[in-house]
Image 1 (tube, rainbow, N blue to C red):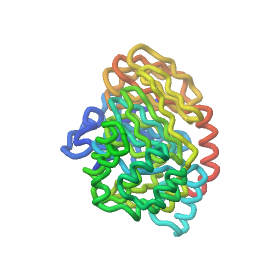
Image 2 (cartoon, rainbow, N blue to C red):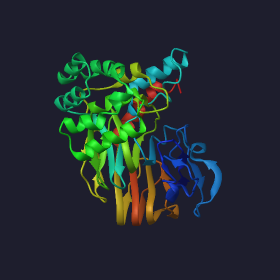
Image 3 (cartoon, rainbow, N blue to C red):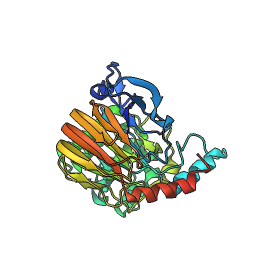
Image 4 (cartoon, rainbow, N blue to C red):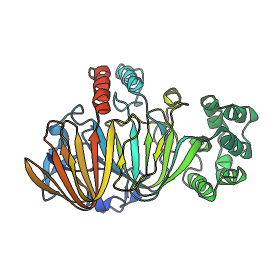
Length: 376
């Protein structure tokens, strides 16, 4: 059992000092994500029981096979990119071809990224596909070519996306909120589209957002986003749990590279996000997910062995006990417990997230490792 602190990511969409309660750093700049894991993009530093750095990384002790999940705290001040994550086999194949020089900078690793966001406070997002009639009504109000609108109305969304990107202009992006109102969408959605316009007035990908369903999560609620599902988180603070990958194929709303062809191949028109209307304390286990999460507020919980476990303190106090002894967590620190470690017991008074890999995760990890181990 080891103690880690998150690795800070200062992406420009983050909230200024938004993660300071957990990072312990006030920088006066955007703080977007804290990473708890071994992914090479941001391996977690080890700390001692007093929260002091040891000079080591979690990745010095475990590899990505032993630590199959990546956990993040996320603070979004404005919309993240419209994006999709590739499947396990698509990621492995893309990474192989990239390593041979066919692609450049498209894939971050050879693994699938499937994720869940648990709202720590009210959180807004676009996730999954909007109904064809609503999407077509918005695009009609924007004056998009009728052929493209008809593709959307008939449910041929992927065929419509290149036409939408070609039709994008600052004048059309400026009308997103008005188009949402004309389509009869609720005020909160009109406001979300105004936010897109405010932050991305010249971004062609803004015209893809009418295709995406809107959702608002209360604290404790969650959305599970399998690989292949389009999404763009809008604003809020949340806990993200995902397979240990940073593969992101973007379609817009970003200053980072956009790979439209790769994203279109990764998109699914049949998979949907799973929204779970839960409260803090409930078990959150999406269908077919390779992980399970409980956000515990008070009391104790046994965490059985034979699964990777991470216990992240969000607020208040928590202790983790096993036959190795007892450790006390501080907000923003986490106990990492490998599958070979014995049963542990968590006692919380505040808010602590308990994340465990599942049998599905073991199968998933073996599959992705088999297809990718020689490429990574």
